[in-house]
Image (cartoon, rainbow, N blue to C red; front, side, top):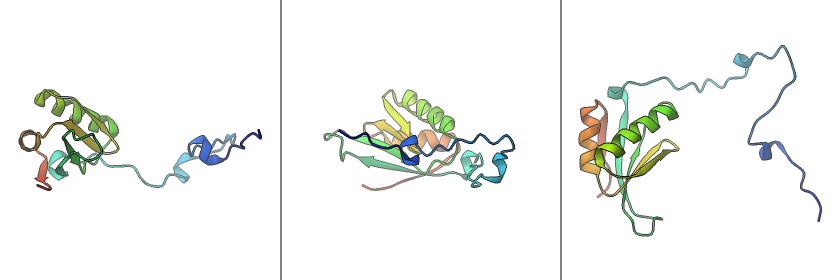
Length: 118
């Protein structure tokens, strides 16, 4: 069996440099997400049961900010709803159909949120 050669894709997109004069600022793509205040955020509250074995979830989409802020917001929502869930890929997933409660909490925190779908 032949060994598979590793390419840059296999390294997860990381490129290593041994150049001592490397200036990272020259190579940034300008993707520094500014910290938006809650009133500047437009969130969407979705309901879904697809791909989850029929279990219902509330999905909050449209959050702009750091992963730490997303996780903190998700943790607060899960705690106030008394349910589990996860926060990843720019989405907060809350177990169960808690759209109304989540929307009320987010509006109280100063976020703009709208209900999407049924």
